[in-house]
Length: 116
Length: 111
Image (cartoon, rainbow over all chains, first blue to last red; front, side, top):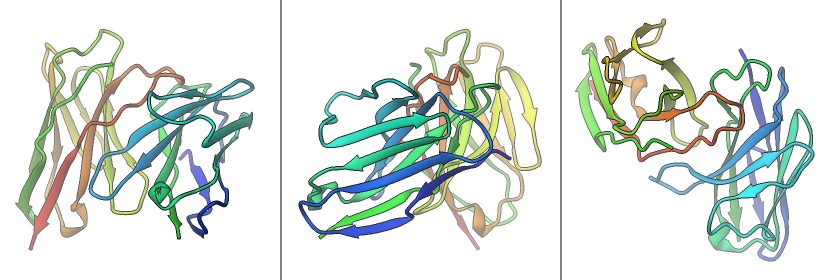
């Protein structure tokens, strides 16, 4: 079946540094990908919609200058958490649908970010 | 975007059938109903999707009444490994349609 892969699975970084998370659709093309953040015992919260070849669309309250999204190809979107702080520590998940078939959405395995 | 309402949590026992109901009173004509399962520290995993009546796959069944204002996910003979959070989502199948999660149902299977 279709697979969405995230890298890395976990990362620990120091406050003030930036971290990049990659999301790849392995066997399909996705013109749109979605980025979520999930805190413990809570649901997934949509952060932004990543659009191939154009700017991302951010949800209300999400700082676009802090969470940089790039969707340079039909199989890769990246989320960069800039100047990370401990409150950015969370579980980040990406999702994508096959643009050709518009079937169900597939989710990456998630990235656990810990900022120390 | 249709909003969904599910029970916050449910307990059941191994071997039992578990039914989780989701309300989506404002579902639109083009909306599909999709259920996902999520284990701790993992991304959600697709379970089943339907538009109307009944859908069955190797994992679950999805029952949708004629008015489509609710749906029921049925898990036959659950095991301990079915302990997870289950999310009911309603939306268009277009690739760019936002996928908004509700609070989900935390299912706990007891031995």
